[in-house]
Image 1: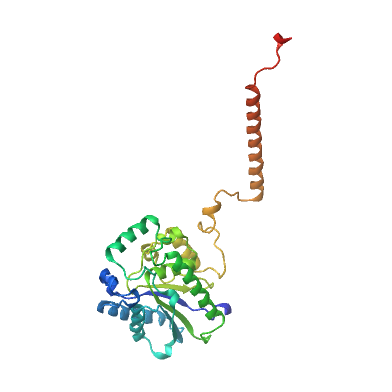
Image 2 (image 1 turned 90 degrees about the vertical axis):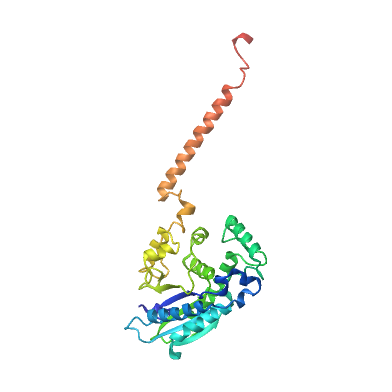
Length: 312
């Protein structure tokens, strides 16, 4: 790994909370505030299993025995409980620290949620668009995008300023324990996915893990840990999967020019070179000139003849 990458986390891992009372029965939201919804017994077990999978993943490289992990967690009870169960798989010396982070909380759907009204509201959201629809007294996914963007800026400052006091000899891993939509928005922001691409994504399952891993060139990719088939089940299009595979060996800051959502969707009519552009402009001028001449000739041919031989 290059010296420029030595303080970058090896992995940034997104974990959705375990099964909650609200996942099991949506009527729970009518009497319990969203942030107070608890995990079910099954959700607690899922979180413990997620912790075991995380430990196995992070400790899997024998050439990096001195690995460490830093946790960010949403302040909701179900994410805090998920992290507590995940923590059972790690010793104290392996954990650099943990930060409760309000900006990665669940999308705000309003206050107490009346079941029938929420069902009708979600139908309207499907017609309006999942990203821009704002719940009454709540948020849109676009609002979540704004606060997740702010969180990412803080995360990068933590890295750039070495606020976590990272030992360069340690392999660092960030684990973000959050919610389904928030995790999808995080990936959208990171990989610069469009609104259309976001709306095609599927929600992760309870305690599901999605791993962004640092490639040799210094870019992060989902395709290092996850298979193409897995990415497809998440809702990534073939173009998005191809982009993830490209990132495996891409250098940090490198630009993938053939990504259609970066360029082609907006400028698919452009010429490939200045010469072609000039030629097309000349051709357009010539065609415009022909249209003007044709129009002028047509106007003159329709005017009455003011002079002819019989008037003399």
